[in-house]
Image (cartoon, rainbow, N blue to C red):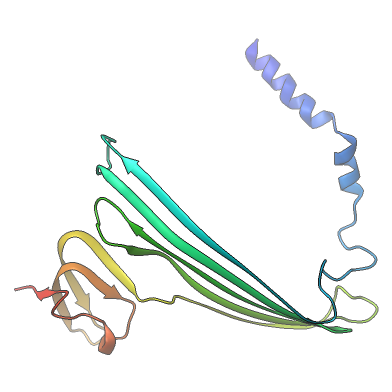
Length: 194
């Protein structure tokens, strides 16, 4: 009986439509007149937002997790600079997002989010069809800080190079994603494995 009632309820939802849902279907995807984005005027239009985040979690006697506090600190910066002219639109955005986390297992702050994005797009609006036109876009997406592999306890890291050689390092952290000459590995961080 419950299955029948559930099936009828689901079918009823698909059959009965509200007037709002019907009105949305009749809406056209490309309006006759494309208006400029709200708040943007001809010339240069700057804008920015800044944000921060903070997370604190505690675990005690949780299966599969170490007891203690986890802390995450981070920030975001978003900047925008848009140029609008008669048929020209040039949008530039800069986004920086960083976060660092400390857990009961690893008692030092480790990078958990690291992003720098620079985006620039130019669009030429064709007079009679303002939503259509040629455009060009350039995007740069990278990290600001070097990547590091951090372990809770001492580990042997085996680094294999393209020329066939390899080295073993013993320690709790290792810098990654850098050229061989600038690996960032120092004797202070590692002791060579014997």
